[in-house]
Length: 402
Image (cartoon, rainbow, N blue to C red):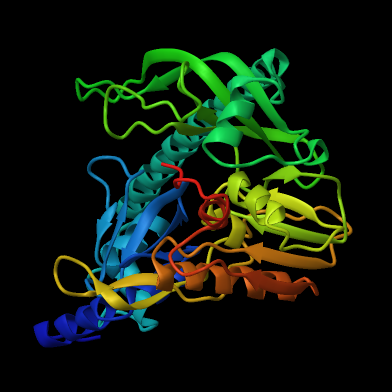
């Protein structure tokens, strides 16, 4: 075959570089979900959770797990060379689905052998690194489990404690005991947070009282705790010292897939983001008599992840582009909380004191997800700009909680 012209080579390579990089990534084993302006997920060759990112508009990808001197970032061609371990020419052939313009640039047997050895060595290194990361996660999970068990062992029911005073005086909450079996109190709980020196290493800032809410999975097993740190003297939240990033609320263990259970199982479950709003909603007399209350800990765990994002109707980023918000379609691979067996109806206890469009997008995800499980679903909306705890405090003629 005659040698191909330079123009033929350039056109063939340009065809590869102009293909949709998301499509190329998926064709080569990537499982990605939309996050902001990128698609992210595990790397098809070196794993991880979200180390692999694709930007469609810029036609580039990046793998944070790739070693130095590899093709762990770049365009379509670099992506295929990274994932497959092939050379430049083979990558273009794979992307375009057409052979090279001529055979003048074939690898020799020795060159192919060396390339395959390099790729196998990289794959082995990636596997070793993945095993180390998995072992580290397993160690942390075991440490969290032991730590949670120790905290629960030291705790007592919140009634008659500083936590009851906080709930009554600051939150206006006086729930019946049968709803609060998983609300506990610890007299002194260590608070580890960011110091004021800019270091990423957590430091012990104090040991203060804490209200503990147990997080359970669908089977009822403990997977985490929500910790609300309290001021030792006043029935209010403790104000952490150190960095302004420190919060009086912390999660220990896992929340994904779980929820804080408030009351006995029933065919109808009413789920709020936080346990305070769930109890306030019930105290306001807004639910049916036979209802199981629950708290998802946050809205993302209540709704689960969406399959993608759409442009926000109002908000824009600093560059003037529309911000992204959930598209309302549930991603079956990331369902959020898992309901216990026997549930037939779901009441979503909403709040309107956060950004309305993004909140509505996530609630739409939740509604569609529960409908797909053949459940009856309704949303209970508070007054505009409020949550149910604030509504309760107003009804009691009290100041709103901080």
